[in-house]
Length: 480
Image (cartoon, rainbow, N blue to C red; front, side, top):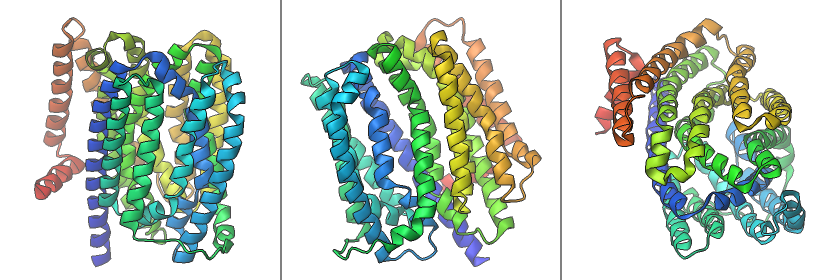
């Protein structure tokens, strides 16, 4: 009983700090994003957007899935962390050299010569990030969510200020590139500070061999996920214009900020907590279902709400030069509402050591979306987004199929956990959208939509005596 109470307290504390961290991060990201979007052009964002897939894949290669492997390891030792540190740094150095030499080829692919020096600077960030992988794994494994909050907020603040100063002084897209470098450097420094760990010069890579079976599958999976998440930017950069890439990058940035608020909060505790109770299946089912209800309770109203205010939000904050982004954002946020739920299902599989299933699901999804994108891009960006939304929502049932093989979780239980929040959020946001159709004042329309959805959502859940809602209110009261 004491162990269960301790796990509950750790989970609640982790969710609280994760929620606070991600809320403050998104608020800061919102403020910096608004200022930069006003200062920079659609082409500036397009230049960075075209390189995102390369730097992200490089980041995944140098991390190689070892953070998840270390978390799942029953008794991770200093020897394990030391091996991961030196392996990551070595791989990153080699990767940076290869990408440095490949910069002209990347520029030729996009027919944009300016990408040669820009890519060489941008790719430095993943090498710097490799220095912080081992200490980051220590903090993550030990649920140091408070420390991660400080790290995230500090790095976001310093890098955001740097980007604004550079943008004001006419550095254009260079400012965004340098912002990434500053962000990563601050994260690495603070990870070392809080982890209180130092590597040794004893080079023993035997732990890498032991973890490679698990981590290699995570690596392959993450590469395909990255390709999938950045597919639009690559296709738009190749077949459309820099402005089109910029429009999509802007829309996707706000969508990512929305669902990352929820996924970041859940990811901070999901895998470590679920991994700690894998031997007690019934208890794991109970914990997973509670996490599922909490995720649906937050995700659907937040993302559906962001979808219906996308036009007002974009025009008011970053002006109507980004109006095309608002239309894309409205659709992407519907997709974004399901990402935290899919993410929770995948966390359960990883916590049970099923990295092969995790890999299979993501590779299949990525290939399906790649085929869909290649077939549909001639019909326009909107058609591609519609198809992506449909595929990703339906993929929830694929995740469920594999989770059911691990734990006794019925489909009726899953629907019972998420359907009430989905139906309530969808009904309220649709109603608010149609009620405000005749209102031309953007500020008034934005205010009415937010008040209607938030007030009615809270009121209805209170009247229906929603356990999740009441527990959240009670926990916040205690914290205050």
